[in-house]
Amino acid sequence: MYDVIVVGGGPAGLSAALVFGRQRRRVLVVDGGRVRNAPATEMHMYLSRDGFPPARLLEIGREELAAYPSVELRQGTVLAARGAKDDFEVELADGARERARRLVLATGQVDEPYDIPGLAERFGRGVFHCPFCHGWETTGRTLAVITTEPHEAMLALYVADRFSDDVVLCTHGPLDLPDEIAKKLDERGIQVRSERVTEVSGEPGDVTVHFADGSALRRQAVYHRAPTRQHSELAARLGCEILDDGTVRVNELQETTVPGVAAAGDTAKLPAVPDAATLVSLGAADGVRAALWMEGDLFRSDLGMTPAR
Ligand SMILES: Cc1cc2nc3c(=O)[nH]c(=O)nc-3n(C[C@H](O)[C@H](O)[C@H](O)COP(=O)(O)OP(=O)(O)OC[C@H]3O[C@@H](n4cnc5c(N)ncnc54)[C@H](O)[C@@H]3O)c2cc1C
Image (cartoon, rainbow, N blue to C red; front, side, top):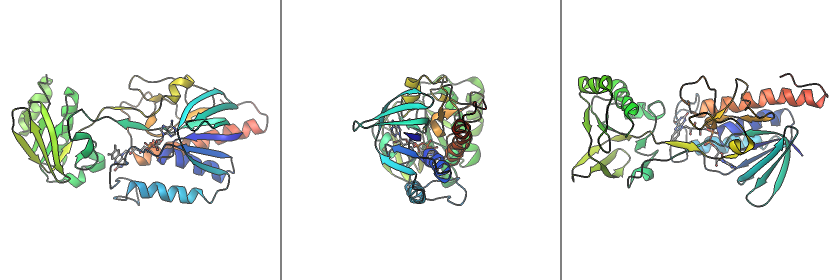
């Protein structure tokens, strides 16, 4: 019986494991190895590691965890989880079954770019999802924003405001834009192209958007905030409340609505937060917070005391 099984070994899961390891808890981290920012060569906005390769960050994290003998890292996928506080069982794809007193779900999200040839292949390299992560690097560049969502047209306004005075909004078909946004796009001189996009081609720094009428638009970078989905359905299957946007509801202590189960990183959200703010630093912080509060709960349980909450 482990004290904790952490599902997911990205920034959130590894950070949680570090806290538990340092408190000499028996922890198993099971990780499928498909972190969200894997396509990106650089990671930004993580103090002291700005511009660092994301894969290297996790490699260092795993190296640091090796110093704590009670932490076990295992490559694999958790297919199912069942049970209740003090006795959960998880089932791995290789058939292994493991038990733990508590669970931390740090399974992240998956981006699903539109079904436009060439778009998914360039996602994270030449096609960017987030101006906070990649905006600085697109300063002064010719930009396009591909979206079919009226509210996402705000992204075109945003990158035009912050980074470039040459931005084209590609709506991949007719889009009924709210008057206020249409007016601002016009004022900013942002061209709107409503032809269907048939392909995205080129290299990072020189990307071409092809349209159904045969024309093409050459840009130095493209923004596309791809729809996302949860990487794993474990939380839902365990009975955790899922918010309307698909994220797992947590409280300020990263606890889900199921006792003994915490969630951290991209997978989790406080209901009051308007939009899932998904960043490496926030994921790491969530993981630490989940583990800190869970450690307190484990300690009280070790002493035979009633839970604090
Ligand atoms: C292209 C791109 C670039 C980005 N760039 C930046 C950036 O520059 N700066 C920044 O701060 N943020 C960036 N982000 C966001 C950042 O990637 C995420 O916020 C961060 O990875 C979240 O960490 P996490 O631990 O919650 O999830 P993840 O890093 O996605 O890790 C989740 C892990 O859980 C595993 N997993 C899922 N289900 C299971 C299961 N059932 N069993 C076992 N393992 C499972 C996955 O395989 C994965 O390894 C970027 C995102 C994208 C898409």
